[in-house]
Image 1 (cartoon, rainbow, N blue to C red):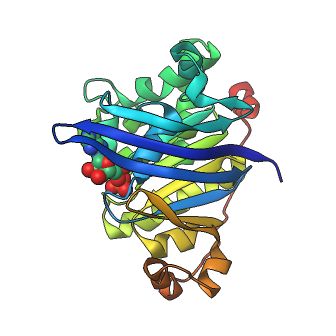
Image 2 (image 1 turned 30 degrees about the vertical axis):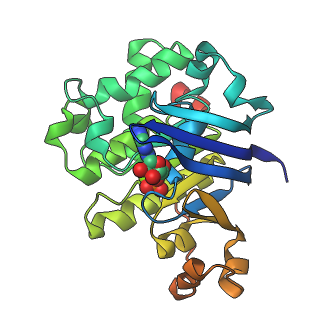
Length: 276
Ligand SMILES: Nc1ncnc2c1ncn2[C@@H]1O[C@H](COP(=O)(O)OP(=O)(O)O)[C@@H](O)[C@H]1O
Ligand SMILES: [Mg+2]
């Protein structure tokens, strides 16, 4: 099994007025192609910091003390900003908890989605908009033409998150970091958005780091689980192994969760959609 991502001994601190605070300490894990790894832990355990480090979008007061992040044979931490820009949004993308913060409030949805294939593939505007609309349609928004012409504030949270997912998945990235992508949504919408993410990544073979504080959610979506506790990995392994023999007390709550496998439909390849 080939790994798409290998994180070795990652240690990250933040500079604060009270001095340096360690957020992530000696974190190591591997992620296989097409696999979903849930990073689980309480608020403040360092989950988001790991996600931001992988995309190299840590805040300026963050200090990477040591470690390596191998993606596709390259150490992300050694790349220059130009190389990183080519990777971001194309090979690695990220979804955050709050879609309305991710989206630009003054740009119409259609343009925000189309921007991605224009920038990374050099598609012309017409092709890019067509692709954007198809992607949006695939995410299950009821009226894609109307949504394309809307501004973020005109959409519900669930619809806005579908737009963010469209942006993140339109180029079939090799890796998706989903940081609490359903936490800000109504309960009824959460399951739909989760199903959608699961379907899309299964169809595209995208590997996923799914960040959540919710153990049952992790068990539901992931192949493997990494449990964080105060910046350190306290447990890492196959979902079912962790179910059978949880080592850390925090992990024992997993036993109450029920795994589920979801699969519906198929996402056309990028080429198919462009040529249609
Ligand atoms: N920009 C920042 N400046 C200083 N400390 C931060 C910053 N971002 C996060 N931290 C601290 O780093 C630790 C890990 O935070 P974070 O990665 O956001 O955890 P999680 O996503 O698990 O809630 C926490 O103690 C948090 O307070
Ligand atoms: Mg977080």
